[in-house]
Image (cartoon, rainbow, N blue to C red):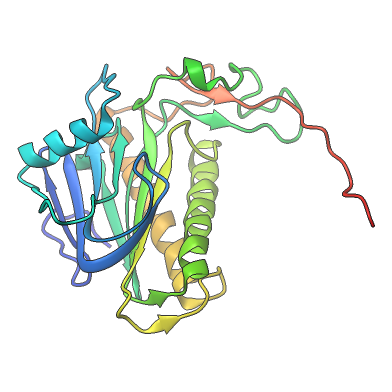
Length: 259
């Protein structure tokens, strides 16, 4: 993998223009956790940078306007393409390829979401504000990942690839920043319905292992590019971050009853 803007993926075409990253492969089935998430078959998936202070709530109109302004017009007959929104400049996006998998990531940690495990005062974030979705400001960082594979995945395998990608993202962020994610992370995975049939996508499979490697390396490279551009580092704690939360509450643990 290199950071050269001229790199081209022979399997998933990527273009970056006017704050929009487009990942394209004809007739791809995508599964997204983003605002217009779910499953759909369409050629493209997008990652869109939003400006500082952005507070739009009419997301469909906003995304349509951004795509049109960037010259990425979608035919009216095509199902709306999945799109993610981020406060990170897509100039900091990085891609990684291995075998049948390609991943693209943008990563910024101004809104970390800490999850203390050992104690309420865990060093990674027990000293920060507790989670309260109503008080969060969106688009202040975010780690977005788009993964594509040329394999045709079974329905469960495509859904499981979300978990594989999210796990790889969390492991990478913990190693690099001490946080497993941010308050606004999202993942899109896609596969080629006409590719070689693949029933499973777990970490021990070719697709799963390649996804883990690609997500790790793309997230790490984007994170480093993001902070190198600003000559700064990711925050050391939730208190040091402009935004973010710490989930310090404890749940009631119980044993399921036996009948």
